[in-house]
Image (cartoon, rainbow, N blue to C red):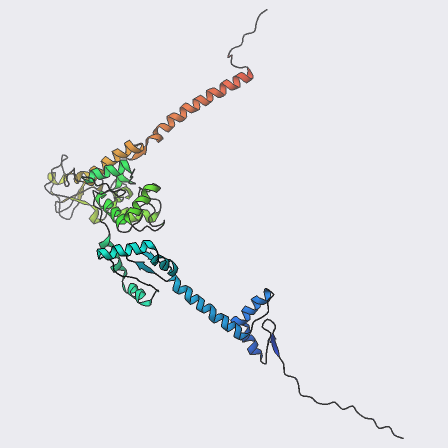
Length: 407
């Protein structure tokens, strides 16, 4: 008897397709690429936030409806934020629809409207500005130069007799400087090197009236809208002074100073190296107390002759030394109209008002610095005497000489 071996039959079933899922949104995908694209959608990120908050996920249709509703709310908020309405009868501007509607129904507005109608001055002018593109395009078309020209044309011009810090108008420029120095403590830095006082005051006036900029903050503070606001700011903050702290502040007003004479270097013979345009020409018929070399000797051609103060060219013209230019210029300008007269007067006023005095070189120094040494010496002597007394009492050494007592 033979036993037939029966092999188990294995049925060949087709393979199951692979499924990709998103647990946050509870959706499935057949392709991995679709799953990866789903992970970067706003719907998936929204459901992730809901999952963290332990909330159930929303379907794609519900998410689309929420997104459309949110866009509508944002659009309404933008329109409300850009709302602007002006009431001509009351002269007020409102930036909220509710506030404007309440104002129209108020008794105050109705009375003002009736009064304006009777006077014939009511002009129904309600401007609703929704930040439309037309206004923006018109503003963009205006160049910076045109805006500056309009600003200059509409600004108040300050004269040299007008005070920079108040509405005071003096009779002369000198009186105006005296007023600003005494009343507002206006102080000009490095005034001994100032050469164009009128130009500096005019520049500061344009900076205040046209630019509406504080001369001490120099654009670093808050923005001011009018001349009155700038003046009030400078008086309240004590900014009635010129900014002179940073290099930018100094370079802004350096054109009104003459620092070149103080920064020139001298060579071994005592002459200062200057450019051709920095020498002061002296007329050939200029009379001098000291005899010139040109008057005593005949200058050969192409030969230069000079002494300690003058350089005589082959043509006979004299070129003065740079250090003596102040003496050559004394007869060229009226003394009472030159800036140096006012500057020297201001230096004297500064010395009286702020405790400054002149040293041997003519520069301003503080009086307190001169008396500091004497005060310190007196204080040191007093402290030393007090110390000696205290030590002598403790050590019983006040008696300088001790003689033994004989019994």
